[in-house]
Every structure is written in C-alpha cells, then in structure tokens.
Amino acid sequence: MLRFLVAGECNKGIARQLNISAHTVKSHISTICAKLQAESRSQIAMLVNQRGLITLDRTAGPRHTGARQYLPSNVTSH
Image 1 (tube, rainbow, N blue to C red):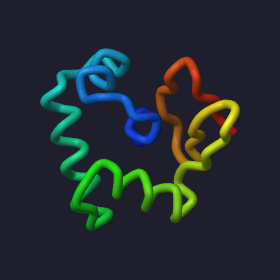
Image 2: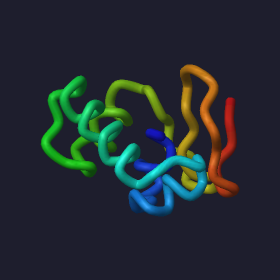
Image 3: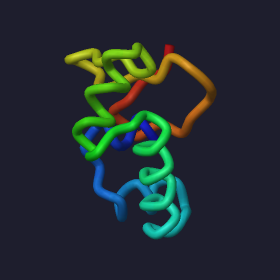
C-alpha cells in the first residue's frame, strides 16, 4: 500500500490494483497515519522515505525495502 501511496496513486486506484474497496484503502491509510503520527498522505510519503521504508529510484519509481507487497507496473522490488 505504501508504494502506491508514495507513487501518488489515489484511493480508487490503489483499491483497483489490490482488489479491495476504496473504503478499505482509506482505513489502512488512516491506520498508517496514526502509526507514523502523520497528518496527511504527503507527510506519510515524506516519513516513509526518511525512515528508509521505501527508496525512491528516479528512473524506476518507489521500491519497498521491507515485507512483500504488490507492485504497480512502474515499480520494482529489491
């Protein structure tokens, strides 16, 4: 989910790619905000990048450094 969020995907787009509802995406993003003590999607992206949870490769897009996640077509995994 973080990869899609950092890539700038909207809730409906994330939901479509993960085959879940947009409401579920919104719920997960709210949980992520609480855990990271973030107030916005952009702040989540900044904190995730600062903490090294996702590295930004300017040519390939964001990459997750932790557990297995589903990837959008423009994102690669380590």
